[in-house]
Length: 513
Image 1 (cartoon, helix red, strand yellow):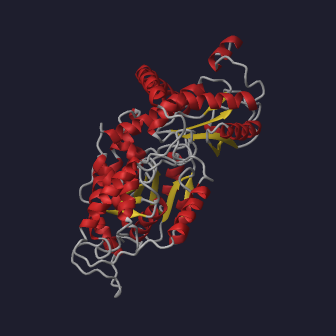
Image 2 (image 1 turned 120 degrees about the vertical axis):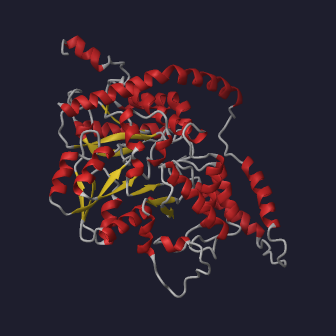
Image 3 (image 1 turned 60 degrees about the vertical axis):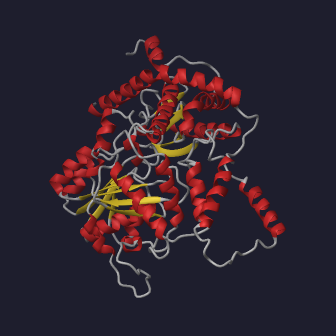
């Protein structure tokens, strides 16, 4: 009963937030729609203006090496060059439009133009950030960019670097945790990213999943039972699960850390940047306000940080963990006393271009609350709240809990859970036929209002629809997204075109309150 009451309060809070922002957003949408109709091109086109800026920047880069004797390699076989690139372009058309607002399925966010161009510019140098000897400028840019990410969590002294993605970043965090707590277990929620169990197996660490509550967060009672055994060395808190965006109850986990003495690692690969957003619920805000109390943090700049793949980041609160990375290989080219990034990372060769793109992006869009970057995150969350509100008000669908960040999950109403799963797949395919690309997820049926919707729970899991609204432009496209979802429901659901009364109206008609 307490959990249901808490869930109800969360839904009311989400509803209240949507209502408070609706007029402002709708007014803004109206102005943008009028402006958009006037300036909207007749067909889609990629942004190409930045290519002129790239040429200018490349000329400036070239000037820095003007004292070298000529050694330019001419472009041979230009005709073949053009033909092959034309074939590449043709083959790359076999992709979903990840860059477009109508792609709202997986966690795919296009890089900012300045990240893309800065990355390309650095390719004429092709730096390697393993050692200063391989990437002097890009190594310094990485240290500066990572320090800004650390400050976002309130850390000044820290140890951290970029990685080849969130998996590698989490591997380093758990590797250090294993060094500090040898022979002890790693635990994470059942909704944590699946790579935590794989990483633990690679590292020879014993991993155990912890059940979740009805809103996709680690169940504290179940965790306490694990902790009482006395063999847990590390607890992984997920700050934004991949499937639903749920956030583990960090303040309560810190209380348990005080009692049981485990190491707490925060996997915020997806959700970390939301610490800058100003439109979170009070409960979620408290989590981010205390995120800096974790022992280690992972965040992915190639998700909400507007970077090309692959760019992850691992941070340690205690710089002294650098001692675990020390090595004395005779062939490593560390020729200065200054810190080389290869001395504090498990990876050796790493693309300096990733650091250059990240540094340029953060120079243009500083990581500060109330800034342009933070407001773009707020737009993503607003988009998710608006979509959730529309779905919840339509009795053809069954919703889960309100989005904490920018992920919405829902399922079509049916007599049984298995029938709803089949309808989810049908809607998914029909929406794709109209260029709206959603995702499917297999989640516990208990996450959804199947009981109040009077659906027979003939399966413990349900195949549901999932939308990640992580592009700021999604806010302006919610009307179009909803139109396609509505049309897909009409075409695929039994009686899908019939406008049904809302659930509270159904209950009222039946005299059931």
